[in-house]
Length: 408
Ligand SMILES: *Cc1c(COP(=O)(O)O)cnc(C)c1O
Image (cartoon, rainbow, N blue to C red):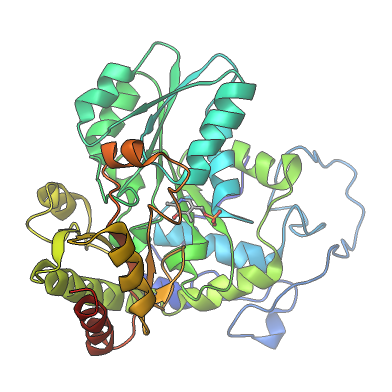
């Protein structure tokens, strides 16, 4: 039996859950009445009495809950309860990275000989994991498809397909897939649907409610939101998957999120809904500004009516998030110059923090792909990906405007 994290406050709004849920009592010292969860650094916990009939292969919260920190830690528990609540999920787990969360989620659904269908252009680390670990070493065949059309996913399914792995929207072309329709396809074939939800976060998109079986967010991004902690979350309502996730987290890999990072994420989450609303408002303003600018060829943002999947975004999400990509009307060199002219906007990979960041896929994240191959997947020399932060919108726009003027 995996741990039960059924939130008590299912009828509460994310704004409320983000502030308190999971931190209500201090395990072991309720009389102190801490309003925020302490950082429990102990690696072991006094058990008080001898329990000689315990089955150590199973997690049983009714026994001494905390006995060794890798297995269970009070600060991590507080965070895991909150992560589950934000997805309205039964089970939540906090991992040491988004990628360890993804590897545990994939691991929970495949065995040698199985087949996986994945969205092409998933996060580069996920792509490498699926190819080099699962496909090449663990005898798990992986097929990558353009999942913007659900039919291509259906066509790739085989009798031995046990997992469909989606990420929506994708990076850097901001392509979406229809989670609800793909869940039907996966389930018709008896396969699990896993979704990497990092770009939207549970504030705007809750894939479990659309039929997904297991959902990952890199907490490094919007969930922590302050660019100072690496971590990952997995949520599910499926008890068998939860048992496996727990096994991978605490026994196989020992990659639970450390207590100090759990504290940082609990703290970061207190302003999560506030930040998400501002990210979206700013991203919308930036998308509209760039869309109207003569130095800009195209803007990819699900909130713009010109986005080919705008209607799907409207149906599937409660907002359009803080990420967008643009194609400048510029050469490779002009694009580099544009980025170097930026002052408020920082040139860096990663996303989801309070600061606005820009990255250039052709030179930074996708530079190992040959230019012709890059262009074939829509990554042109002047494509830029912005993670729009929560600074004052006028300062962001003025910075972009000045940098665009410099390359005219
Ligand atoms: C950053 C990211 C990851 C990996 O998360 P880490 O915390 O860096 O391991 C996975 N998926 C997406 C979409 C990401 O943006």
